[in-house]
Image 1 (tube, helix red, strand yellow):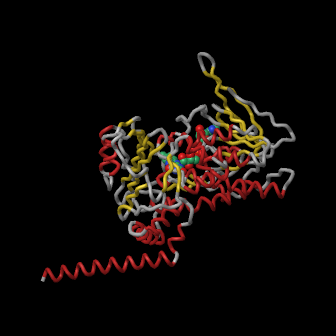
Image 2 (cartoon, protein in one colour):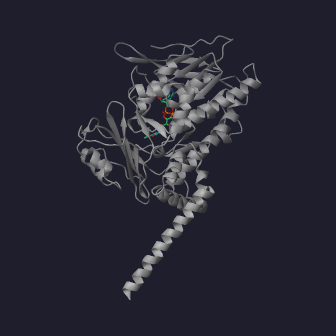
Image 3 (cartoon, helix red, strand yellow):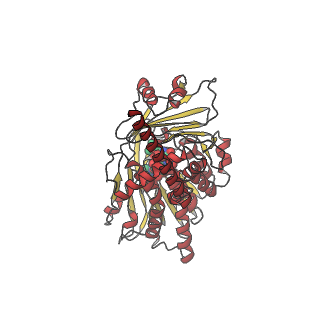
Length: 478
Ligand SMILES: Cc1cc2nc3c(=O)[nH]c(=O)nc-3n(C[C@H](O)[C@H](O)[C@H](O)COP(=O)(O)OP(=O)(O)OC[C@H]3O[C@@H](n4cnc5c(N)ncnc54)[C@H](O)[C@@H]3O)c2cc1C
């Protein structure tokens, strides 16, 4: 069933391309400023949380970082209660989630670093349900945006052209429809065609930076046997470069566990029964292997290899048509292993809120000229930190393509190694590390005097140990 949108001349209408996390969050923000928000989604949207073709990554574990949870709660007050009521598992990052990092197991302690573990499908569905309850929001599904509409001199995007699927009894046909809007937000993900649409309007497309560590995922759902008692709800075993393999398992709704194995540098985890288990066994710690060995698999292992860091630099364009912004993975998609995509999408929605607020308080007539540039510039500042974190880590592997780490990056990596080793010894440092990982604090906190002092002390202590050991060896050798 298709809903059509008729924009009255006195109504402000915003339109979102793509009804996934970035699109839904942007839509929620825009309900504050527009009489109607239309979300155009290529897929059919189910009334239940279900896997759909447009979001193949939903087969794999999706951590909503604490910062993302805070922002989503801000956008949809009370949503955490809905997550919990739908079976999402409450996890304390420092107490309930085991982490086998560079220096081994990190300390466990209670903190306020609470988040929820749930499937990506459930999260999207809960957000969509909240939006659907708003009568300013219209979902147009099974409809693919094929191009942008513009004014005659191409200075303004005025809507989109859509190809809609019409299912008849026997066969399927398509019809083309135009939707007009004052603001079009592209949230169509990694494969966004916005660069080509802009080019077709006579604009220079954005340059793209790609840094690819050739990471591959394979994920599978399990029911753990009843006699498998744990006092943890999640476990992560990270790779130690040049080692390539990592993995994680998390309890999710429906009494299930999602297990994701990951290999960097094309060391892709296999998707056959034995290969998947062997890969789990080969991780730096056997905790995941031991947990799944006798567990009941309830889905086949599913692979995903499209994981490069990709940043389209809209912020650097000197010309952009007004009435058009790009958000979410369509601007910047990260290597997913650091779990930053949905949180960055949420921060992008907040940025859109700030920019719209500023623009419309200056222009009560609804003039959006200049919004596109100011939004993309602000967004790039948000992206810069997770980008640095993800690519800085990926550069640890010399199989990564798209650039080489400079001396500064190499020094940073050495310093971060020390912080990570300290995290295995000190609750304070582990807490700080989690706060940075959850995008609650910037990585610059690792350079505060207090941390720097502890890093120096550790280096001195360890070199003393080495010195004494080699002294002992010399004495024995004599
Ligand atoms: C394997 C993997 C694991 C990940 N793990 C995490 C994680 O742990 N934590 C985290 O925060 N992030 C994770 N991410 C990233 C996360 O999935 C995305 O950042 C997040 O979904 C936001 O993406 P988006 O909404 O911008 O785009 P997408 O989720 O890709 O959605 C794009 C939407 O647009 C629709 N669409 C596309 N083209 C059109 C068109 N022309 N017309 C209409 N509709 C269209 C698609 O059908 C889809 O619904 C992971 C990503 C991958 C690949």
